Length: 192
Image (cartoon, one colour):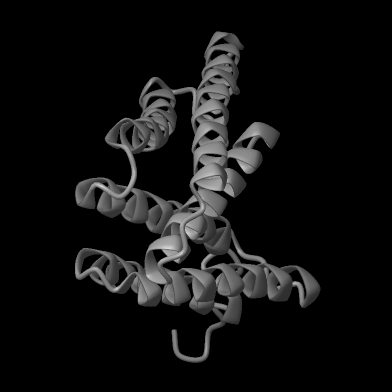
């Protein structure tokens, strides 16, 4: 119907457009890493981080939060992080075991959500505190790796500490989400 307002849950607000731009930035970051122009990847990664903060601020400050944004924002974050880790792993810039760990965690979470939905007991997506710490560590590690490669600055101790932190927090996050999933799946199905 002409002139109808979009539903609040699916409206493309300014924060949602910023988030979409971040998603479209992912292939450019992957290209920059694959073509060994790490300084470009580093700068784009910083821009993505700033855009993440800006869209979150705008959504909260000006009451522009939407259901679409609640799904797009973590999708943009995960698309960027997973793509960067995969590309750095393929290049041999970070250990492949770490890439497998980070990517497997996200696959397990998405798989658990899909399985709970298929079994008729949908699980509402909510980030846990350990997951937020894990994401922060993953971003910090990627930033240090891209920055050190892009500007030829060796920081082996910092890189090693952050890599260990990512590994530990990823394992803790897997355990926490698994416990949450089991608890949810053992609870009575809503509406039954």
